[in-house]
Image 1 (tube, helix red, strand yellow):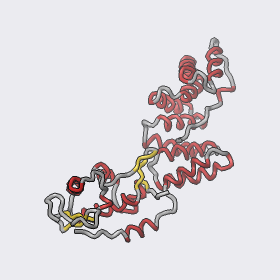
Image 2: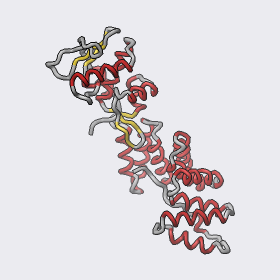
Image 3: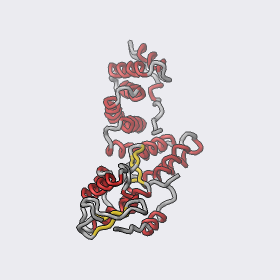
Image 4: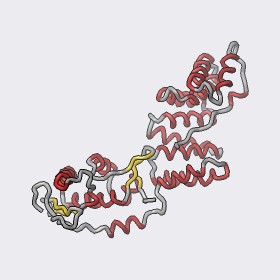
Length: 303
């Protein structure tokens, strides 16, 4: 499997800022792969970034590099020739390109005139010094381990390493928080879900999981706020309706509890809690307290 790097890893290794990386991506000078809400860069992207940095040191704007690459692609009739396949140099005024073919002459694509020998040895040494596994690989290892109770500790360790490598990766935070919950480490689960919600408040799954762990911590009113946010973002999130009903019942809000139990049944008529929800709706006339209301549905994780 080809090694891929998160934005945070690339920023540290290449000495570039988040703003620069996002700008060069928008210009398609680098072509990261998007997965699970994160961007992953391969070695060819690192080569392209090293080229851009060298040109930027000579005051060549990124927009001019983009125009030069576009002109070269038109000249070669290859619309998808990546920057990493080209050897580029500058004297501060001209951008000189060596096309991929050994037979093609180097030229200045913006003017049609035409040199550069780009060395990747220093970059290769940087890559060699990186960790053996990327954040993406740690995440996948966590998913392999979190389906069995006996390997939850290994899953937690893998997800933690993914988060360490990519601190802003919300999906990795959600899976780490879920694993912490399964291990009974509620405070750590709360920390991960809180970060996920703070960083990405429109993530319904993060809101749902934070609401669940707050309920477990006895913070019911706060749980209601986050569970309500989850169903506002994704009205069909049946488990959130069920847990919201349980929280409303606990605070004496019977009508709200019935409404969300009914919504659970609407979205999951044959779901694992459908009969329970129907029985609770029936017993709400008058309502009858039940110890079952202390049970939460399982957390969700990223697949």
